[in-house]
Amino acid sequence: MKPVDAVIVGFGWTGAIMGMELTDAGLEVVALERGNYQDTSPDFSYPQIADELSYSIRGKLFQPLTRETVSIRHSLRDTAVPYRQYGSFLLGNNVGGAGVHWNGQHYRPSPEDLNLHSRIVERYGADFMPQDMTIQDYGVSYEELEPFMDHFERVCGTSGKAGNLNGELVAGGNPYEGFRTRDYPNPPVADSYGAQLFAKAARELGYRPFPQPAANASQPYTNPYGVRLGPCNLCGFCERFGCFMYSKASPQATILPVLMKRPGFSLRTNSHVIRVNLDSQGRRATGVTYIDGQGREVEQPADLVIVAAYQMHNVRLMLLSGIGKPYDPVTGSGVIGKNYAYQMMSNLSLFFDKDVAINPFIGAGAGGSQIVDEFNSDHFDHGPHGFVGGAYIIGGQTGGRPIQQLAVPPGTPSWGAAWKRAAKDNYLHTTSIVTHGSVMSYRDRYLDLDPNYKDAFGLPLLRVTFDWHENEYRMSRFVTDRALEIARQMKPREHSLTLRQRGDHYDVRPYQSTHTTGGVIMGTSPETSALNRYLQSWDVHNVFVTGASAFPQNIGYNPTGLVGGLAYWAAKAIREQYLKNPGPMVHA
Image (tube, rainbow, N blue to C red; front, side, top):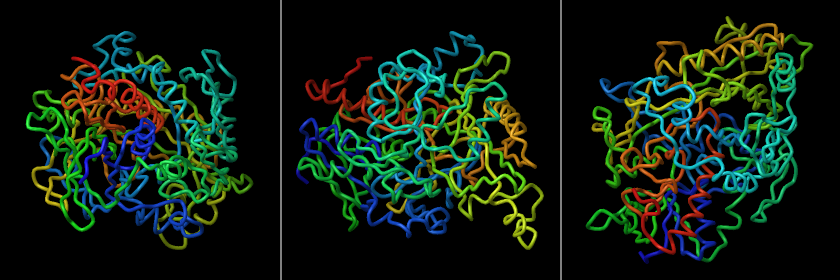
């Protein structure tokens, strides 16, 4: 293959962002995507896309687990087994990746999320953290990232209400957020009735709820690339689906209409990258090797390699390529695979009498909901409670699809006439409250290559070693108790609760979030991180790794806003520093 200036591995959110930024700099760029090409039209057109059985249950947009999956175990003593059926998290596939089937919940991190280790030590003392907790600072500040997170919001047409404009608190927005230089590009999406009931109850208890920030455009909008988005109609088919309204931000709806027409850019689909190639010294990448749609092994030479796949795929590719020292949980040495984290959630379903018409089919993946943020991040004094981290509390619903989003009261049989009666009587009168919590990183929670299981190409699967820790049980119980107070204030007829109790193991069967993080983390030292503050590999200077694999621990918020902001931050460093003087941009 003819050499190119840059090759991008994976073509979801960060791959599309890097494609725009690097072609802006005049580079010849090739993107390699393992799946097929897909676009809003015809792939997500209505009414075909509103098929819950095909998309939500059978996972039409997800990566086929028969070709490649991960294996999972709870501890170093266990034997991992493959993840054979989708439950806990959903791996994207094809052009756009998980950026197609996400909900659009578009948060920024709190400033303290980015220097969490330093913050905890300063406020509570080093002994406040368990000895096996391995949280770290990101190596970049909120102030540095703010312009890039702002730009990503404008690309997405994000809808919301600012709570902190240049240090001045604004009524109706999030009073705990970091400063914004300007408001969201669009006003909030209209609240569902369930969200209105939640917000009223929260205010009565002294909280300050605010509209959920949503990458669902609330009105017609043109983004900085000149791409037009339409207003969300709250159809209730967001998560697990593509958006037929051009309303939910995705690479297809915001970037690809421009990028795909650029002469310096080309995309190759059905191109499964199996390694990053290195020179004889192992200090510089020479390109990548991939398997094409005909099963042929192809080498693509390139001066710059951007690893922009899903978090788990990024980690696996770095391990398969021998870039960076694999993490060893016994000695604590090494960096690739270190600090894997997930999120912990709890869920309340609230059932009202028939005079309260919730109409849950009116919903959006993001927007139409209200948030209480008093117990997220380090927004409150953790000292009396004995845990690190927190969660936001969200009220409302994302839709009322009949298979996965139909709730019935506790004690209802799982089938038969009584179940049908309960479904009929409660469908129009049900809403939910969810707590969406952080998970810290620990010495014994990590990723490596499985010694037993291989993918369709004969390469080892990624092995996940993960289970909950005491810190997260405490956090979830505390925030869930606050959510229960709000639920009682809403005065439903009854409610059900799903909460992970102390002693419950991580279970891959129920869905929680696709917000898996870590494994190729950023930081301030090559001894403790794989990437420097610009997402540049400490070991191979012309390899950059984007995405949530860079998170040293998981935040309570949904990660996409930070993922996009970090991608634009790294792209600016590449354009303004690296291309002028190729080499390490941070010296250890």
